[in-house]
Image 1 (cartoon, one colour):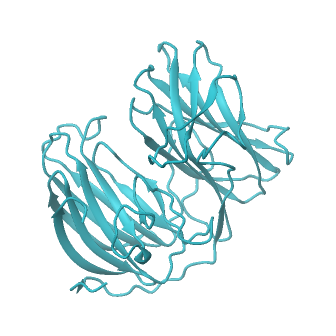
Image 2 (cartoon, helix red, strand yellow; image 1 turned 120 degrees about the vertical axis):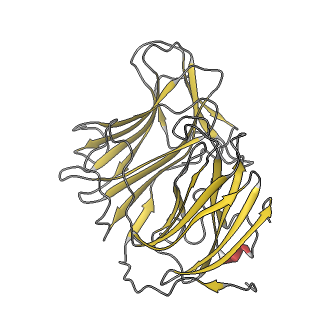
Length: 354
């Protein structure tokens, strides 16, 4: 790109292992129906044209619970695995405003056979997202133990204790990644409701944005400022918010071979607080990625001070702290080059996305 830039960090030598990963869920985006998913408590599952990224020609799984009690409304798939693999899970969930507060359940049931017929246990994450907005739930990796030949992965819906039915929720982008060969960091032996989030493997390139808002008295509640992190592939030719921009509405873009580890993943997002939002590429291409931050909504709390951090194999190589942004502004931070992690600073702010 023909822009005057300041080289802000020298190249960092690193070694990236030849790791492999694959996305293994069938029909994770619920494009036209519920193909690939086994549903229970029918007819309490429907295909819906509502889509997490507002994509046309795609939809979501709509689950609703119109009976009280502990029985789950649940959709599952059977995934063949082998010992030593690690599973990383992501899903978008939207609990509807018209319902009551609901629990989203994420199941991982190990089986001793290849057909998910002989369960040996159950690991379950329980989350209670806020009503009326899409939330991305991220978890993993979970290590596949010896003797396990398949995993039942499931999405569930249940009313919280004391809530009334009906409750309903949409699920979209239900992605399960199998990792192998070299993913040695960021492990979680078990899933649990007490520790539902575990760090993904810190291999490759990570970009994070966090922020502080002086006018927000409680950034930890469910009402707060919303800043969106953007990572742009050079094939985008400078066009933000398109197919080659990884951000909230395009959180798992396909920039190459499907399932390839050179694709980015928005592994963490925060729509109402202080971040961080995090984009990771496990095995980046030898290109220059642009970084941007969009102040999407201040919700009346005023200016925010944003900090962008660039990490290589989990170690920070550059940080820009305390950039003041106003509602609706877009910060063209600069770029990061791979391999090496050299950062080129642009530091340009515009009103709206350029």
